[in-house]
Length: 625
Image (cartoon, rainbow, N blue to C red; front, side):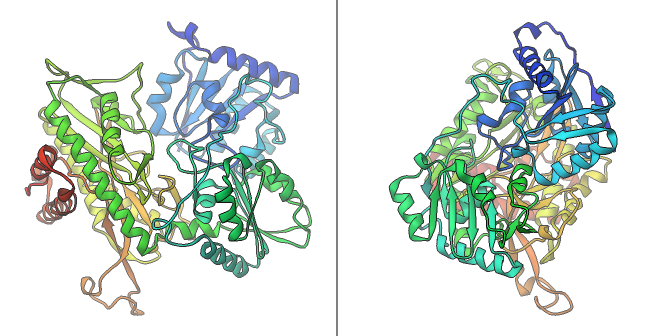
């Protein structure tokens, strides 16, 4: 696999309005004063979060690229953003006129970084903030730089001297994720974690990832947009637990509840000093994929370190039966909100002004009316026609497509809507594509091939413990048959009123590891896609729950030595799939039967929550074909 360097024009007609060149110049001056030949700015924070508080959004501030994944490298004469195919078109548009190049990643990132640095200078010093650089990635980068005559300086924040008026840390209070939704008490989770520590021979364990921390302590917050988490660390010992958090964020009631379960609350700034003070007799469990280089460097030299996945990462991926009940209820509420929106949408087409922005506003408003709603779970993606071909497109006030006016449709085509919400009882994420006007034969063909992939994987049965990447080809096979594919993963784990993206499972082309084994209770997305640049994009996404297969469904009794236990997917998302976009000539009878059964289930469970035009819309869109 290769990497292409795309040089964006340094000057365009709107370049004089961009603040990026001046920001880069300030960063270069600071780097020169420190003796650095280049600076690397990842999309990361000290907790290795996917979505970042503004304080750590340096890559966006210095480049103008707003995608959620990417890295900025700045050298004396050039700068470049490295990102994968999901963001190429977006990056090309946002980097134009900034003086920042786009490097299209089509393979491992670190070799691409090193190749780019060597094209800038034969040797030098690369500065990064080690407190936001993942330990595993920092080790790989250090090893790759050595033969290239570049050295890594990771003990400094290179942005401190170049980013004036940097946003401070968020101050929102934390709150308890209480009964009935948090059905497993905090004390029980701590006890289970300590047993896992004993099993590994550890006396201490450091938790840095925010969703692990929130899940373990049954706390939630709003420090990171769309994710109900809060900034903090935890040090868990066999006989004590310490939460490092801004003390102003913890009310007396929450602090008392934590102390009752043996959790001490200490200021966030004391995290690293406390890590440095761990006794030399300790055995510390850390997850190398979930701690930063800076945290690892703070561990005293005499402490024995065990590197293994966070036990909480595995535990929180396996939702309990009690949690599954609340998740199904959240899906029903979410389905009702979408039915209300789509009923309005279809009635308003050609009679009201509707844009991609309108879709976001109206759908969010409908979700906000539903029981248990807290917030969106990620920025709504509403992409009409060519915009739908950008997997992570987001309309803005400066750039959006109009779908309808009071005088009629702006154009015919396909509208892709990828959206989701946080409810007290679960997290949703769903993608649908809707016909605006009459879809043509090519659009129907593409839609049907993607739908066949969604259905094929949704119907899979597989042995318990199957490594999740092994399932990826099932969703791609209908597309591969026609020489087609998509550049993103097929599925990601989803949290329980937590991050919309969570591990360890991933249905993708990722290299499998034992922690990706599929287990009962895991929730994963199934979302194959097909994207025609500058024409349309199609993605059909549902969330599914791993459930044990009934003995009557398989030939052998589950649990027998010959075959073992099997799992199947229960489809959780409840929203019709637009049958107007289907080419029935490409559908088998069993596929039509699955779709009709799914639509009947949507009507059965969502219908009782609706009345009037929304119920009529749902009945129409779930009619059997």
